[in-house]
Length: 158
Image (tube, rainbow, N blue to C red; front, side, top):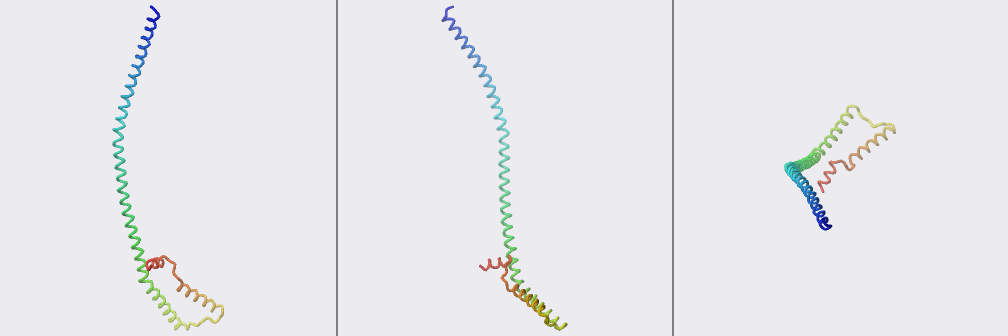
């Protein structure tokens, strides 16, 4: 056997080994690809219903938000109506009630004065205390109101 024949034989054996190794690799690669195909189909079968459930959940949440918006609007309307009602009641009944209270106070004082002959205090300290109380009552009655109803009335008047 000559050197060229030996070299050819070695090359042929090398090619056979290489082709055999490539065949083994290709067989294993085909098994991996089959398993990947099965895995992808299984994931697809499970993912589609999950995506549908997620879409249904989002749709349901959107419907609930629309309902909450409606409820919020109704509550705002009810609050505005209650505010208007309270200012109307205060405007309608507030003045007459104050006048009635002042009138009843005057009647009580007159009745007490007739019954007990009410006299002014004679001591200076008692007179000063009575004058201080009267000034405080007058100041409270004539002071601008800063409550919620007065703010609403000012806002409504413009």
